[in-house]
Length: 167
Image (tube, rainbow, N blue to C red; front, side, top):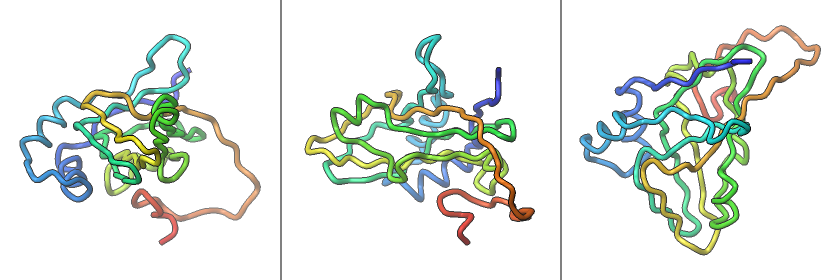
């Protein structure tokens, strides 16, 4: 059953997020990265996870953290959520982890002011330097259904990403 479709965010959104989150001042590098964005895909027929790849070369020293703009957004059916995890090999080798432990991409994030741009916050908590080349797989996403409890009617409309519903 198909529940979602990955898309690129606009170039303007990608550039804005790259300039605000990364130490990249050369817009030529950002433009090239945008042109080479790879939509997430599964590695094998039996894979549950959709691999996210880095759009840039990345060196992350021990105890350092970064928010990585992926250039990707996802349109999914209501009643589903995308969970994001680090690739297990990077966790074993480098103690790489997501800063929010598990990334949660809700179906209404697609319509957020930032176009639903999936930004994956990672940290290197091991002793070795983590080096990722553009195109390397670093995170994976798994679509899961979710269920609701009886509650009051909710009128809040999502506007942004990290922590936006706390505002």
